[in-house]
Length: 117
Image 1 (spheres, rainbow, N blue to C red):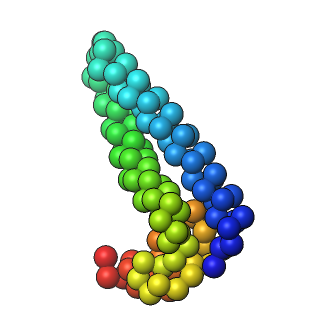
Image 2: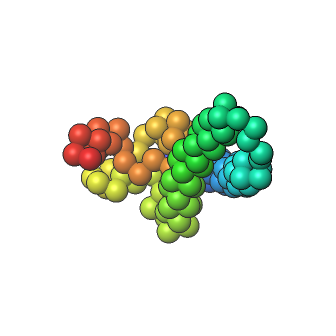
């Protein structure tokens, strides 16, 4: 299990990532607004704007999901349950937490979760 110092380091990573995502989401919102006000001269312009808008929407949707996972992880830090697998109650390996700081399952349970999902 992660010790107190490691949890604080991971908490800071989560906070930094949260801030970055919020900035990206604001940028996506601004981009979407500019797409709406863009003038289409022909069907190619329309296709390009539609494609860019669609991509922005997909990315923003994924970022909203990741932001929710980060918020949940920060809540677990506050509650003192961060780093504990939600499925088996065992400690999540520090390497896994460093790779995915908002992980809520240990590696074996994540594999089970993915198969059942």
